[in-house]
Length: 520
Image (cartoon, rainbow, N blue to C red; front, side, top):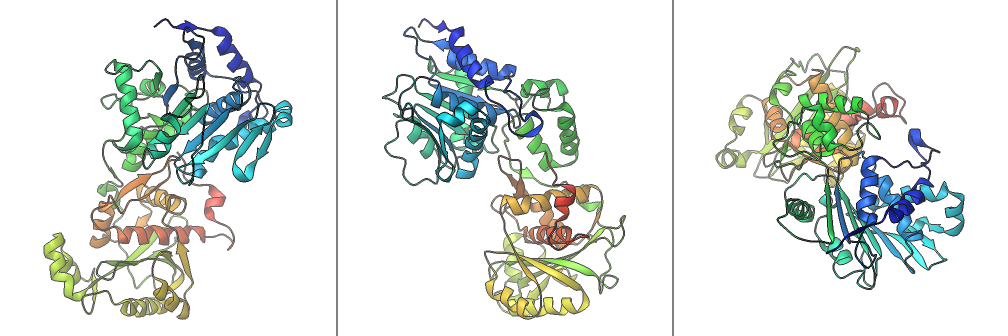
């Protein structure tokens, strides 16, 4: 097949994009200047033509690390396909696993439109439906996500699929790309994603296809694969390889920030996984173990419950099913600047199931009970009333300011604790709520500013934790992948969050607001 190259087509796209202006950050008000990898993308996508003058590539797959500017360039290309590609009644869609993720690119497009007098005059933006309309050609640009109920009747001229490694299934992508756009002369399906943290699913399938096409193991003349990233056997500690994986390094990403993240990664298994996935675009091949136990063991500073009596503290309550471990953890904030966060954990199991659990789980619950590290309640199910009374008694010894709990459970116990005079705070288990205190706990452990007294049950649970990440680099304990119990660790994270948010600041402010979250 004879392929042609058109510099004119490339310049047409590039000139359109250069009319746009950034609206946020240090580049606010400045024209959109394309960097080398973006120019290469435009050259290959728009400049490579068939003999009839239409675009060679219908599907373009781009795999690139975070913070490379992919949201900005895809937002600009979406506007080009809406306004300047010459397609009458164009239908441009940006799709992602959920509406929030899909809106990132769309909102960037809106900012570009608002920053350009001509574009804002000729288009109409409807934020309530996430839609930009171009009345002159009867064209529109729309957000779609996997949670949209009906997607029938679509005739896309362009679809941008963002972060496909997060897609729960291929349904949305295949519905938008398989047979779609057949009525169009040259539809464009643009995949933009970072590497994923699981070797399965639609994202992994597309990654494998891209690798096969690059290696010549698979022939698809309409498919353009572009992958920036390291292979498993590449040296991830070599700065030269960082540039290989990050075509935006030195442009939208500064080397100092990468070096900072690298130093975190050398100490923290979770950050190492995130560094490899998000900075170096390496697909993760195993579950992420969260904390090195030698880090945790270095925090086994003595904890004297008697010396903490009367002290201000915050609780985290992770209720089990009626037959499993229930955990309650108190965290005491530092009294002095150089002091530590002291941790008092408590655990319960049903008395009658203890021996069975020892045999089944191969965990020394019986020994822990003898040592006083694990408590039991009468019967073969957890006696919540016993735990409530226990917490009430703790409240007589310690100044418990708040108790955080998983909002999806414990309704009756929460009501009872509130009736006993405690302030009880619901705590979400998603990334938004869990990520800041999870990262903070790791930071404090590395700094040896946590004191847990070597409590064996809590240490066992800390060793059990695996984490999940989202596209933004947020983390949270993954109960599904953590095959052993992690209830105490989750309770600790919740208690630590309430402790930090209330530490030395006004009631309506958060310490996170004062000093910022831990970021990548």
